[in-house]
Image 1 (spheres, rainbow, N blue to C red):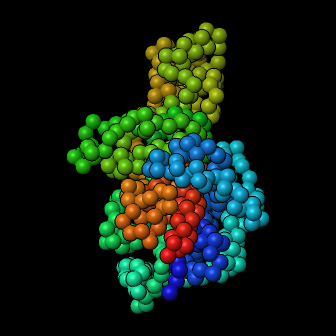
Image 2 (image 1 turned 120 degrees about the vertical axis):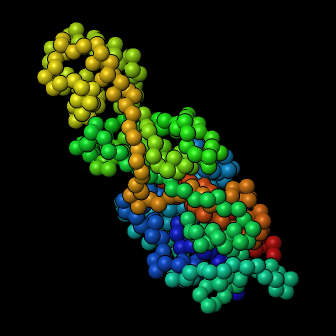
Length: 424
């Protein structure tokens, strides 16, 4: 008989188990992991450096980075947020640093530091880790007047008083949770890059610049998708845009993929975006600038980059405006300048498909948020069941926010379990 079983050997599962064990040193706790390794997502996050959290310490600002869960996480972030996460690791000898964009990493620049911290804590607290332990059944049973959980693992059964499910995007576990009566919001990918083949970005992978990107709405996109409310103010983003071999990536694109996860899935990842490569200008303002340059500059358009954008991108956009390489500023027509201003401020690109962003497999979907008590991350349907991490319908943009959801959910679920065990 266990006091607490945690299903899922990832970030949220470990964090929850550690906090339960600290508050209840004599509790019998085990983490069940279906794979041969634990903390695999921690290992690959941030290119192997582990983007632990984000240096946003205001709960309302922090919650604004969650396309699903923004409203629900506001209360939890008042209880436990980025500053608490930093404190947790620093108390255990793991110093974190803040990078320019607000992302926080261990000073060691190695995710192994975070893994070692967790493994050391688990050993110190006597938490069991059971690897290659795939859960195939969950049921509540009554024993001596107590409601317990019976967890099927292979041909065996484990019995526990409290159950924390922290399995991330796991369809098999979602199905078991659904069979218990919970609603599962169907999962769709979030955090992905856009596949684009276009001469304007061909041959310049690695070029990065600040840009404003808008997803253009489709007039007709199938009956299924008409239920999705299209909000153009949401499906617009500004930030660094990275040109890649397969299309576009970078924060500006990744934010769109997260906020537009469901709409873009209904588009079957075939849609158009409009890019402003110089967000500080609109088309008419840029045309006015060009007309002034035309009066003073004598060189060719191609050789005179009058805007703060990468040279190779400027060359491609000039050529896309049908301006010959040898055309000088005095020679160029107003119509040609209008076309160039359009390319720079309102270029339309066709997206055909998506690619996963590095190793960050993030999905929108999971246990319906209305069925969770966010003070404790406890199921409203089955009181001794708790959730933490990406198993619930919460996901964030890139930058350490998905991990912060795991830490906050893990901590509050642990706190709820501890209170629950006291009252029993």
